[in-house]
Amino acid sequence: MTDYTEIWQKLGLNLENHAGLLAVLSEGYKNIYLSQKSRPKGMEYFDFVISEVHGLRIKEIADAKQAGRKVVGTFCVYVPEEIVLAADGVCIGLCAGAEVGSDEAEKFIPRNTCALIKAFMGFKLAGLCPYVELTDLIVGETTCDGKKKAYEIFQNITGKVYVMEIPNMKNEESKKLWHAEVVRFKETVEAITKKTITLTNLKKGASLVNEKRRALQRLSGLRAADPAPISGLDALLVNQVSFYDDPVRFTEMTNKLCIELEERIEKGIGVASRGARRVLLSGSPMAIPNWKLHSIIEGSGAVVVGEESCVGERNFRDLLDENFSTVEEGLKKMADRYLEIDCACFTPNDERLENIQAMTKKLRANGVIHYALQFCTPYMMEAYKVEKALGSIPFMRMETDYSMEDVGQLKTRVEAFLEMVK
Ligand code: BJ8
Image (cartoon, rainbow, N blue to C red):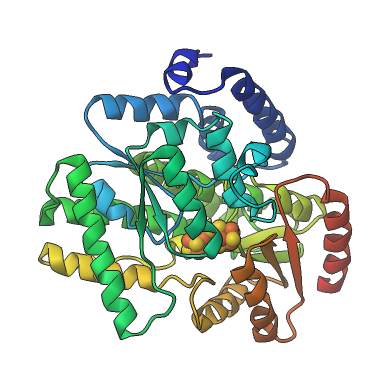
C-alpha cells in the first residue's frame, strides 16, 4: 500500500488522530459494505475509491494544484459545479458524515447544531480533513440558519470562505437575485483561477456535469426493477462518491456499473428476493460515511430503492439545458436550473411533495421513511407536509445524528414499520 504520510504531513493533518479515523472507517466499511451478499462486480471500483479516499484522490488533487489548477470546496448542491469545471478547477464536496471533532466544534458552535455542520467544523478543527486543506476557495450558501452562521466562523478559521446568497422563495425578484449571484460566482472563480470563462469552456463544463447527472439518473432508474439489482447501501455510496471523484472517470465507472445492472435485471438477479419490501428515504443529505439508516433498513430485510435527498435525486434530477449560444445565456439557464432544486430551506416548497410522490410511484416503493438530522429544522418541519401528501402510503419519520447510540432503538422502529409495509 502506498504511504501518503508525507502529503498528510504537508497538509498539516493530525497524523495520530488521522490514522485512528482511517482505521475506524476501514473497519466500518468492511462490516457494512464488504459483508453484503450478491454485490455487483462494478462496485469494486467504488470500494477502491473509498479505500483511497484520503490517499490516491488526495494525491491527484494535490498534483492538480501543483499543475496550477484551483480547488473549490462546496457544501451544497446549489453551487454550480459547471462554472468551476469551465475554469479548469477541481470541485469537491466537503460535507462530512461522521461524528468527529465534536468537542472541538462545540467550542465554536452550540451543542444542538445539526451533525452535518458539527462534522465539517469538527473535521477541520481536529486536523482530519485533507480536502479542506487543499481548497483555494470554500463556497458557503445562505440556506439553513445553522450553515449560514457556521460559515462566518469557518471563515475566521480558514480565511477562504465565500458565500452565495440563495433566496428563500422562487418569485421573479428572487430569480433576479439568484441569477446575479451565479454571475458573481463566475467572476469570483475567474479571479481565483485567473482564467476567463468562455462559451467553449462553459459548454464543456456543462456537458461534463450533465453526463455525470445522466449516469446517476440511469442508476436511479434501474433501482425501479424488482428484484432490486443493487442495494441501497451501494447506490448511496455511488452518490456519495460523485461529490469527490474525478467527474469523467466517475461517469465512466457509473455507466459501466449500470450496464452490469441492466444485465442483472434481464436475468432476474437481485440483491433481495423478488417482492422484498421497498423503502424510499427522503430528507436530509447523507454524507460519507453516514451509512447508518440504510444499514439498519437493509439489515432488517428490506431494500432501499431511492434517496429523495441532495446525496441522491435532488442532485441529479434536472439537467442543464446545454442549448445556449453566449456565456450570459448559459449562466441564465444555469441559474434557472439550480433554482429548480426543491430544498426544504425554500418556502413554499410544494414541488418537493410532488417529486416524492413521483419517486414513490416510479421506484415502486411500499413505504417512505423521512429522515432528518437532529436540529435540521427545515426538513423536520417539512415532514408533516410530506406525510400528508403521501396519503395512505406507509410513512415514518426519523430524527437522528451520526452517533451509534440509538441504533438499537432505530432498528426496533424500522422493524415495526416494515411490519406495516408488508
Ligand atoms: S440544497 S439540503 S445541500 S442546504 S442537514 S446543514 S439543511 S440543518 S445540508 Fe443542504 Fe443545500 Fe438544502 Fe441540499 Fe442545514 Fe439541515 Fe444540517 Fe443541511
